[in-house]
Image: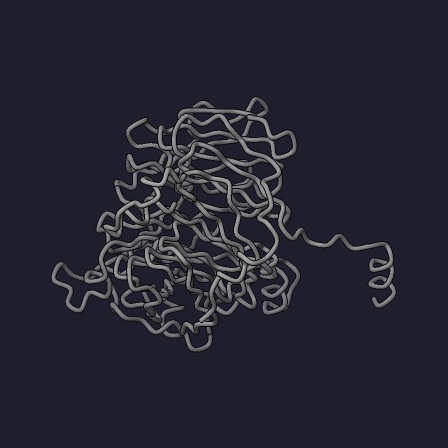
Length: 426
């Protein structure tokens, strides 16, 4: 088991390159645009802001969700084109298009999920090398085959072997995986898949075959706290999902087998609060209400988890996790010291001493699991972290109403010599 204490003996924590101020309430989530130098952030009062990551100024601001509900999650991806999705605690997910003057004043679509919980939505992640891999498998150059998900129905077996179920699902409706949204369901222990274009529910995991279904695989695990949808190259284009629960467990689903998960693990002794999958969709990282951070691999042939590194943090509570697209570093967002003490029932001794609460961001080598840095800026709970798609920036958002931008271990730019060498080798 690794520990992040060693990082405290290293050089002082770097400062953020910019602090974005403008929100009036706690910032719940942030994400980067996949192509443009833009950052999106959402706050508890319902405000959705767009920032220019070069000038560090606000580009646009709208009230996306009612003040009582607030913006809880934001998602952007190449499959959405020039649009983003916001999730509120009002049971709605709304789409917004990026116009010349900023975000559209009215949503371009609204999905009424009627779900009220603490689980952030997830778009479907596709491996960075998926296009090349799938083209090779298909034996042509026409690009990857569509990512398919079956429309929910109440026929057929509850447990389906993926190999046996392919024909059945191919006969039904197929959807592009980049237009699918995954979220915890109305039944809080279940996971729902929604078609973004048509604002309709596609399926539920586990699949409901009867009102008196026995052996329910998630009911006793409590609330679904985090989800991550992805399409591994080995799945033939079918969506897979990781879902984490209140009892600390994480399940791995394949939509071809909606009745039961492929595999289940329990890396946390308390609620598993966040999960992220890497750029190749071959592993990930999870954090929870305990003091453990788990880095794991996914064996797609066996459908099993494999724990690579277990990191013990000095203080409990990981609210957010992220892995940089190049799979080199990972970051976690932690609760502040005051909140973690109050949740555990311990006396807040720092209040008597006049100490300020500390909210820490931790950065790790994703492959080795060793601690690289502890980032100290925020004065309240850190809710989320996100990496830019070019791997140059890390964004952190906090209940102190700010968003901080960090430059950490930027990827090396190929030199002219390297480019010449690569061209010569070709």
